[in-house]
Image 1 (cartoon, helix red, strand yellow):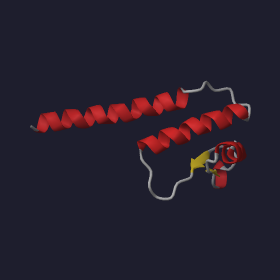
Image 2 (cartoon, helix red, strand yellow; image 1 turned 90 degrees about the vertical axis):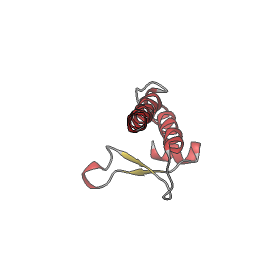
Image 3 (cartoon, helix red, strand yellow; image 1 turned 120 degrees about the vertical axis):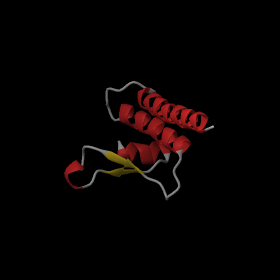
Image 4 (spheres, one colour; image 1 turned 135 degrees about the vertical axis):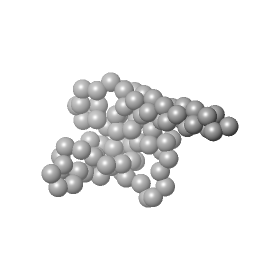
Length: 84
């Protein structure tokens, strides 16, 4: 999956460390990382995972991340309104 992401989609994923080697991957970045960049990396990870044979549905990871980010924005907006 890591090799596929790099070679086919020009995206750098890192392997898991220590006990997690071969079980997880990390999103590679150079310090700057925002929601849009994470969504892109998750979408590429989905494509690479499917190509590697994983049984996942396209969009499932990105949809979960979008819901998480939207929930955070909604909570922030509610706090701002309560403070006014």
